[in-house]
Figure 1 (cartoon, rainbow, N blue to C red):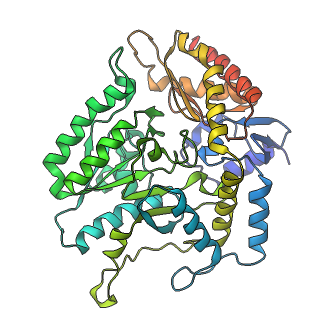
Figure 2: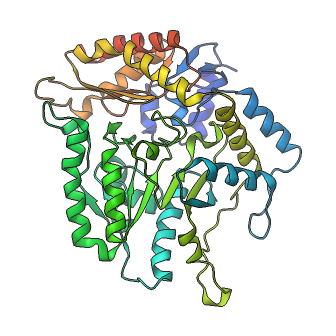
Figure 3: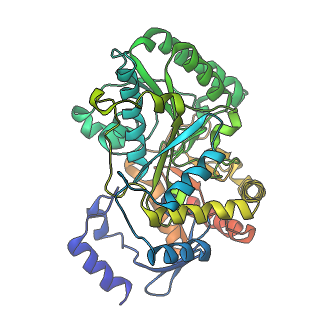
Length: 449
């Protein structure tokens, strides 16, 4: 087998996600044979540094032996069992450990299959809670502009990235979208903190006007990842938590992409010292090995569903693979690595190295901003640095960076004209230097035309 033969077989039968398949008439697929650490290897022997953690899921490297061994052991014992009326030790142990790690007040764990499903669970739980407590007028959700929460219909509705949402608008529930705290748009000399405070006034105004009909506000804490890696200050979350309490509205923290050490703390909410009413987790939860999601919530919300069956207040939401034992064991192994190694502190040192190796990008004539939150760093390309005029999206400058980087053995997958680094935590400083050099040359290649 080689790359070409596998690509031909693939294109005869498969339809890939987030892809215009016609692109593959001139953009070759990359069949991957194996992975090790931060590296992927194709069937022709080429290696690629995985700078995007394979869609942000891989935290401790490909083929991590600790996680791999745990899954193999579990597979010989119990691979799957219905989670309604039955339970198992990995599912129990994982919930126990997660509830010890998440912010105070979260005391119940509900499993789902993936990030979008976790958001669906949180939305339905919040809505259903208000029905159960006699507040049936609460039926709407507030979301931030430029947000992204997944691509199932409920999750898509509470997102605001037009590229994903526009086509399906007739299918989606109506939500209230509030201008967000995206610090890319702050005034010259204005701090992230001050801009985030200033922008919160728009959320406060919306809550004053609509709280009586609103179930919850949903946000991605600190970083809007699919929304071009736009970032804001933790003070926004502090103000939002206070406002949700005052207006009797739930707060849903979508930590699917930013949880498990990505932002400089185990969970992004920690940087604001807040606890949401719902926290959605997935992606890094299993170290990138298997799909699994968890929704953590409070006992007061749980108690609103706890009743005699005949009152029909139960949360009748299910997935066939809810609490899958293999995935739970992968997650337990992932958490064990966090326990046994000072991962968050190590990540802070790596984040400092990321800042060092990209320092020269700040002065690049086609870079409007280099922004960073923990292990997430974004480089925004623009046509005009002074005015911040963007390149027309049709020119696909980011795609040119992607193609160049692949030719040099690096997997970068820009979001439009935003080049970002979101690597596994096992990357070395030498590998970061190489990544930055390839990105620098890739940007030169993409903007020279």
